[in-house]
Length: 274
Ligand code: ATP
Image (cartoon, rainbow, N blue to C red; front, top):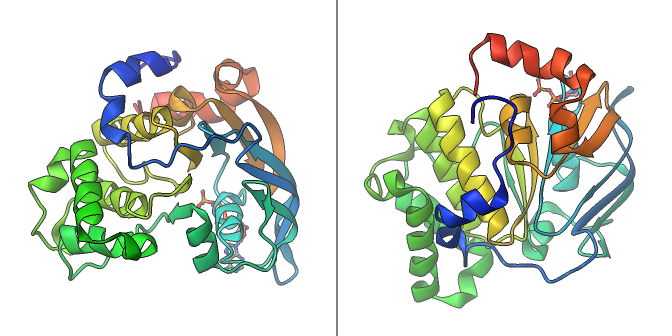
């Protein structure tokens, strides 16, 4: 993923997009899967997200980039119902007002936090099994099939299935966090900085998996500081600054936008990021 060129969907599909099929519940909706209107989130008197409006078309990756403290994590927490917010959140056309995080998981949202929140003293496989909580009624056979699909997406997790999560490398932990979220068979994946602390090669591997999942029908809202890597797999992007949408466009446009280049892409190139 060097240079500013985007990875076309077809190149990903032909390199194993089918691996992800089944983990993603393909949405047949024509309307956006997620619509956010004038969302505001505050910590006491500090307004961290201000009048943010966004749309995630079904089956696409939309990335949110921006500097530290822009409100990206706060936005995801509010979408998941983990923080109170004002404004409107519609998921699959349904107003999310009044629904708690568990209900949003039941509706088909899944969040992978920046901290990855694994159960460190449990094995890889047990962490994946816990992720299947939403589908607990579907039985063991379905669960094992879903675990196999996660292993097909991230083969190195299979070789570590009995290893404790706390002994995994940073990249493996991210893969497990993503895999565990997929076990809930979400329709919308909210991903907070999956590249955080990872080597460029692992960042590419993780984001390649995200693109494969998108090609299999999953919708993804991807928060990233690594703007270049995110825009290379995303369909659209939003730039969040001081809690507000400063820019929105298709990824190709943003990759060549002078402001985005100078503020968010040049810096990463200098650091040798992908
Ligand atoms: P980063 O990329 O560094 O993770 P971010 O874009 O995700 O940043 P947030 O973590 O959402 O930004 O923070 C947005 C603003 O809200 C910041 O000014 C931050 O200091 C503030 N903030 C975040 N969490 C809290 C909290 N629990 N209490 C008070 N203020 C908070």
